[in-house]
Figure 1 (tube, one colour):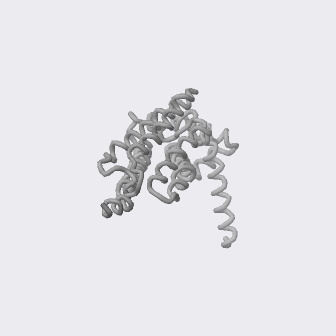
Figure 2 (figure 1 turned 180 degrees about the horizontal axis):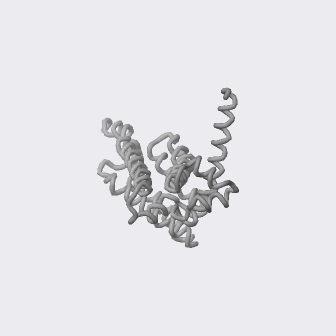
Figure 3 (figure 1 turned 135 degrees about the vertical axis):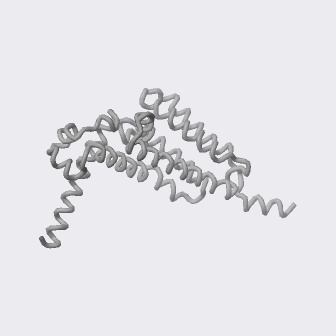
Length: 218
């Protein structure tokens, strides 16, 4: 087989895999990861069950691949744009706004996939729950890192309890996700506004470098 033939075969496989995952995400966003079966995804995607088995292996591997693809989408829509903001506090505020926009615009029909999957697998030990926990812990660690960066830059008060603030922001998101899915627009907007307010209430009007200059002139 020539290099061109190998590359073409690989490209077709990647396209087929992406096509299957798009349909798997649409199913899992409504019915959960446990709602995925090779037969159902094959029917929805218009491919053979054998094709899915070749590309993914078993049902559990398909479920984890679906989770991975969803989290890639979430990162591209929410995390990456926020990470480019100039200051740590701007980054945090953008992260809040991006998350609420992601849910409100129904990028996924079931809202925040990670929140839903965490609830779905909270009492189901195994590789899927381990994968969900990996993303949960990574997200918590990133949020605390961003909050600490804002505190170190003087954009959050020195006495800010970073783990507690991170917990509160994530709790607002969990509540907002349910409110959005239940059509409770007022509660959803309240959670968004309170998330921003919480960050700003912990903030300083001037960065630490500016406050040091003011103190030095006194």
